[in-house]
Each structure stands twice: as structure tokens, then as C-alpha cells.
Image: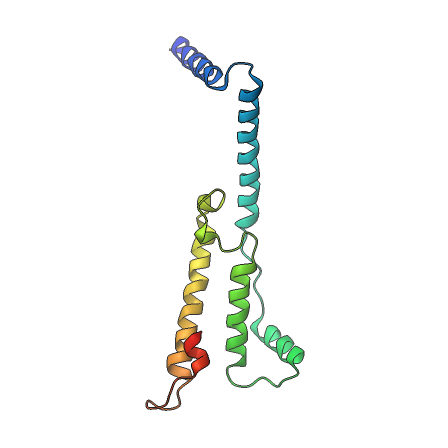
Length: 149
């Protein structure tokens, strides 16, 4: 049994030597570049898979209203929070990962799920603002800015 295992690994080593051109500088370079690429994508994957920090809605609203020199009105906190969530989604490490087609983005599973959750929240809140909160009566017209959003 032990002899078969040793023979198996010996055959795999011989296959690898044949594939890389045993002792060939080009073969060693290809293997080294492949290993380097995998290490870089592994490190990037660890960095990109950390969720962004949470924030206090009240504190963010207070800070934003002071920066704009305005008193917060009804809906100010909701809109400010939606804007902050969308900016966080796009500006986090790695950007919007759900569209990635190469590693490390395709190897990550938690971050695309987190992104999808944020996207659903933004979509639902924008729809609620447009359909339910922007109309005072059922016959009133939609706010054109909310239609675009």
C-alpha cells in the first residue's frame, strides 16, 4: 500500500516536471507567477470580505444637516441613510463584487450576499418613497425626481 502511494506521488511529480519543462526557466517562471497570483488573490479576498462598519443614523443625520446648514425635515434621515448605504455599497473595499468574473470576487460568498441585501433594502425604500410617501392623495402626481430614482 505504501509503495503505491509513493509511486502515485512520484508519477505526479514526473507529470509536473514534464508539464513545466523540468528545470526550464520558463516553466519555473510560470509556476512562480501562478503561485504569486493565487497568494495575491487570497489576500485581496480576505480584505474584500470584511463588511463595512455600521453607522448611527441619528449621528449621520445630525452631521449632514449641520454640513448643509439646514434643519432636518420629515424624510431627511431616510434619504440621508439611503444615500449613505448606496455610497457604502459602491465605495467599500473591492467595490461592487457581485459583478466580478475573476478571483477573488468569484470565490467570495458572504460579501455578494451582503451586497444583495443592501441592494434590496435600497430598492424597497426607494419604491416606498416613490409610491407611498411622495403622494398626498391617490389622484396626485408623482414627484419627478423620485420617478428617476
